[in-house]
Image (tube, rainbow, N blue to C red):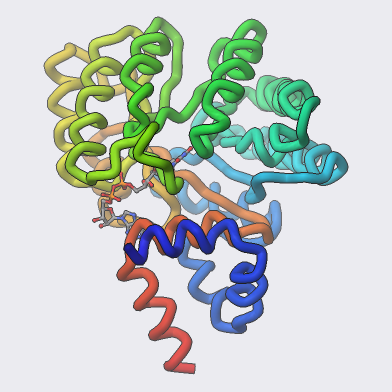
Length: 308
Ligand code: FAD
């Protein structure tokens, strides 16, 4: 219940002004976001890489309605990738892109603009010796995102994509995407979706996650297990073993600031472990989804407010 209220609030400009105006918000946001600047993102990447973790960097922003802002986001990724190249980490530090931040939400020409910007980012990533993964946003964008993915993969076959187990369609999408070389990040899904397209019950979302996992692990692609759920993390390990997969043919992924000890433990045990690191000042939507996933985070936020 609180989760759905927070997800609705994540799209409300009024609540956005209210939450962003509270001075203490920033200290709580910092738990989930690496900082405002590119330098902050690079510093976090170095720190995480030194402790054996791989990284995917997200320049925060989404649902951009302004063509110049979309172009600016693509430029920001270009600059970030040039800095990443200097670290020499190769694919250990890649980028994640929300297509709605680079033009997908711009109306009739949105898909075309998003594809052009995503292509520029893929070119910069290739020059930096690394890869791009497309985040998946709300269900109305899935067809467009997959079309753009397929167009990008013609020139950049290592482009990855996130698939959300809560959507009824995702098992079929996983089947289509489980071919050799296909990088797929499996997540539960973070948006408020209607019962006409998505499982509403947590147990059903988890069961669908396992079905998708099985398809991806038995396939020939490169599964990326995006979850903090201990049970699903263990099941992924078992399915990978049963499928005879080597450790370098799949990886775990978790979000910056969430279950950091488990991230380090998995890396120490020799699993590929990549941390999704968001940075930038447009943190509102991302932050509210993290609160919605775990209502205890709201308590954390409120305690910070009263202890001022
Ligand atoms: P849950 O059942 O939600 O959580 C399991 C346990 O993890 C909880 O009990 C808690 O201990 C911990 N936990 C989970 N969330 C939090 C939190 N916010 N704060 C503190 N502890 C927490 N979603 C999309 O829709 N599109 C994407 O492109 C996308 N990309 C992602 C990339 C990565 C690397 C990851 C890890 C997630 C991504 N997500 C994305 C979010 C995902 O869909 C889920 O909303 C999120 O991961 C929570 O689900 P869970 O699998 O961790 O399981």
